[in-house]
Image 1 (cartoon, rainbow, N blue to C red):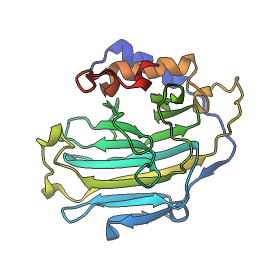
Image 2 (tube, one colour):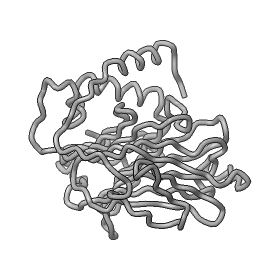
Image 3 (tube, helix red, strand yellow):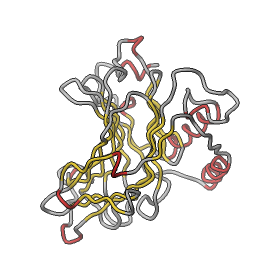
Length: 282
């Protein structure tokens, strides 16, 4: 992970400029009201009056939850605090998905690691059952010490992944060049904590240390925001929250991708000897 004093100074400068704007049809969530605990028995828990949720993993089972309602376009925000310590072999997945063999899906997956080594944030987009659009990042903070906000903006024009309101990835609608885009299938929010030590950490070389179990991740401050298809106020200072990234948002995106991106399928020429996918050429 490359960085410099200048790059971190630039990041701090940009953070000071974040403008928080209020969007219509925003619903602050309550886990009792908005989610069902779907598997893992008592390893998934809701407490503090529905304001906090935890998922745990032990050698017997992981756990998971899903939203009661489906969403078709909008912004989804969730704060997570990931498994601390030696999390090697664990995966905390937080994603939107429809169902069926031609499902659409928008993924955040957090791949655990040995104590002191960074988590890998794995992102992917599935359209009509096809994924293979991975981008991976290190984070510029320790995601186990405090809660951080992970967001998905899903519009007809694009999908934007954000971390603490910092855009890290944009997947544009490329239907004009024959690439399907998720626009017709409503999706639920899912999250799970599970063991994938056959591949998650260093390609499966590092296994889960079950003596450290249970492994626990925490969730709070869920928020769902409906986004209209009309244009937003161009003077809001936060166009990237609803529309395409403005110049400020593009600078922030370039900073993340320059210093923290560790894999981009669009640059993997060995994987695509016949040519990179069409959406990568836009």
